[in-house]
Image (tube, rainbow over all chains, first blue to last red):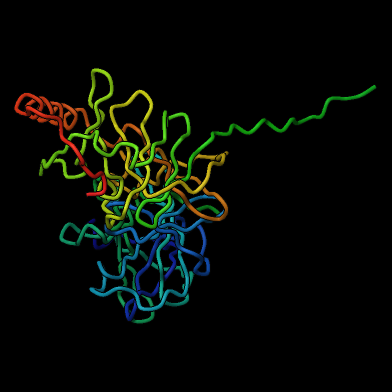
Length: 159
Length: 177
C-alpha cells in the first residue's frame, strides 16, 4: 500500500492564519486562550515574539503566519497553546491565530516524501485540502528529524 | 491528643536576587553572584581601555590584584541599545565586571523556570532561567555567561600586550564611552 492510500480518521483543530486555514492534531492542543499580556526580553531567536504566562508557566509565543502565509498575522484573536516534543520532553508553545478554531474529525493522509517538512499530513475538509502542521519543524528549538504523521506513528485514541 | 497534619507544606526555597535595569529592560541576578556594587565614577581613571573589535562588549579592564577584571557592557552583551550606565557589578569568583544602568530593587524569587526550549540561541547561555515577579517575567542572568574562556584568554593577551607597550598608565578613561 502506498502512502497516499493510508488514511485514518483523526481529531484535528482547524486554525486560521490570515486568509488560510491549517490544522494541528488535536492531541497536540492544550487550550485556546484569549490574548494576554506578552512579555519581551532580550534574546536572539527571531521566530519568538515574546512569552505569555499561562497557569504559572512561561510559554513562548511563536507567530507561524509569516512562515506559512508570507505575512505577519494582523489581529490576534486567540492563542492556541500547543505541545510539542523537544529533546525527549514536552514543551508548550503559544501560536497566535486570527480567527476561531474548530475541532473536526477528518481522514488524515500522511505527508509524502515530496512534501515540506512542516507538513505532517493532509486533510480534506469543507472542499479544502488543508495541511496538518508539524510543529517541531515549524517552531524553533533543538533540531530534530521531521516527524510525519502516519498511522504507524500516530498514537491511538480511545474513547 | 494532637495529630500531625497529613500534608506539610514544604518550605519554599527562595533565592535573593537583585533586579537591575539595562537599556529599559529588567534583569535579575542572584545576589550571591555579586561581590561588590560600584559607581562608574568611582572607577574613573583606573580602567585600561580596549578598542578590540572582536569583543565589542568589553571596552575596559580594571586591575584587581594580579588579575584584570573585564568590564562587560550589559546592553551590548544582550544586543540592546546602549544607554548611559551608572553602576558596575563586580561578580564573585569571576573576572567579569558588569556595566549596568541601575538597580531597581532587591527581592526574593521562589521559582526559577527553565528557559523554554524554543529559545535556542545565545540566550541559553545568557540566562539561568525565567522568574515571574509582580506579574512580570524577568530573565535571571547566568553570571558565567558573559565571557567565554576563549574571550577571556583573548582579552588577557591584548591586555598583556598593551601593558608591555605602555609606558604610562591610562588616565581619565570614561566607562560610558
